[in-house]
Image 1 (cartoon, rainbow, N blue to C red):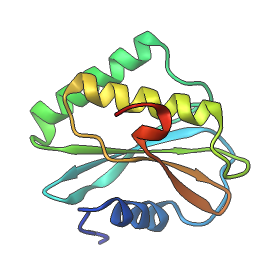
Image 2: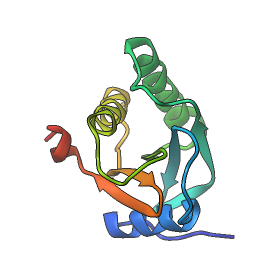
Image 3: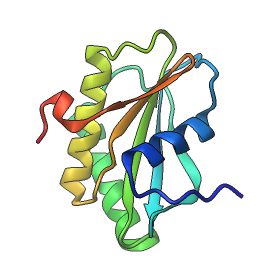
Image 4: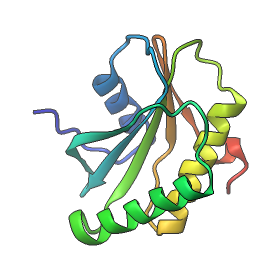
Length: 135
């Protein structure tokens, strides 16, 4: 069983590499990892067909989901998100919009959010909050 300790951004990036592999992606997804006591829970949640950043309703729904997960499933959790998509590893405006939305949902839910990552053909890279204008 894969049970890394995740206390740094570098460890999280390594975990995403291990979990997502070096392959390319045929679609657009957002992956959610819940971390409790510095260890990821044993399953990832995929939000499929995630080509376009969420609207207000979807963002509210994600924030409500995070609140519920923190209260009922894993008190004290941290959340980590990864956007996967086909194409090159250059961070696009859509990637930045997704990262902004994911950080915002976690902030609304009062759940700590790790650095959002982007997975593309052969690459995993961080999209830190300061890159999208969040401090």
